[in-house]
Image (cartoon, rainbow, N blue to C red; front, side, top):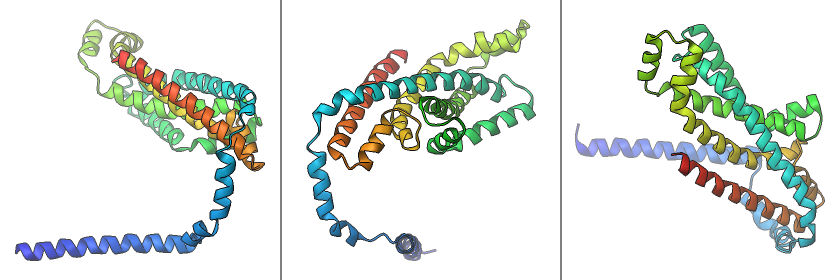
Length: 259
């Protein structure tokens, strides 16, 4: 095949992909009714929003301290519970510890199901079962953390050095002893790092959970937006940014020391 023919074939293929993508975009915009004209038609409203948003109500700061602390506490408790349950399940899901193919398949399937459920959907389900409040937020964060950390720990176990395991098996160690003395020391730093990462993610996620009644800073953020108190919204968002950046910074320092 000539070089010219190859270039033409690739060009037609790329043009076809571009046209297909554009058709998908325009058809989606038509179905959803999205129009760029709406952006320009609402410039006045955007101006009013920015004027209020950029004039924060500093006197509102004392009222957001307690909800912010509740958000942090929710994340701490939820992350801890999620990690505590995730690690044993990750051990059971791996063939390094569990030789029964049926058991590992069932556990991996359950882990996958939990991991695919969005945290907002989890929060809505728990609100329906347990009502509005911080307890619902803790449960949501715990289940979300379980799904994330269990998969990460499972993958870490699958890549460990099998030398210590074989040595322990040769002297007749039980599965529990192998898990504690041959596997856990190899992944302890990774578990700590994954836990810190999950905590960072949960701090961000917990601010949104209040929209469905799961408690925390999201509740007053939702109410302020509903009342169009954008001067308070800016203060709440600023507080969230400060907390998230601070926790990310501390977490990064701890993770570097664990390496």
